[in-house]
Length: 92
Image 1 (tube, rainbow, N blue to C red):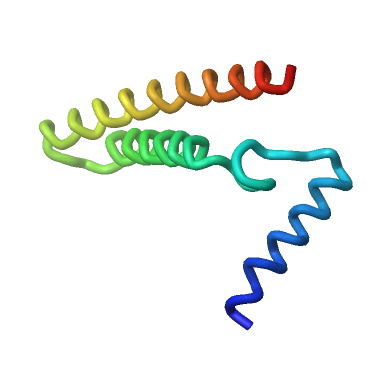
Image 2 (cartoon, rainbow, N blue to C red; image 1 turned 180 degrees about the vertical axis):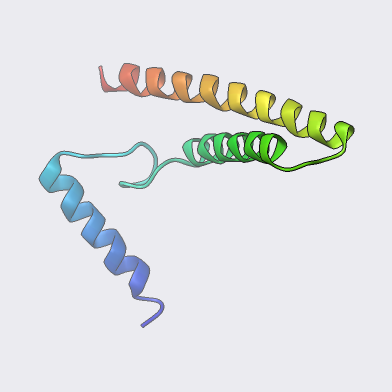
């Protein structure tokens, strides 16, 4: 049964996507690898910022978390904007 679960989930997502006119870039109806990486970068950046602001850390570690948060959040946001613009261009 374990091997059939992903096939069933994929078929359900395809049916729902066809009915609602919803498609995602990449393979089938699943997000592309680049989009998943960008979302992971935003999640890591947000987590690093939350940790640096809420937990009492040594000064060096706190600044390291803040720098990681700024870099990952900016990089992820710029990448997502570019991804959306490329998807709009590819539809035309």
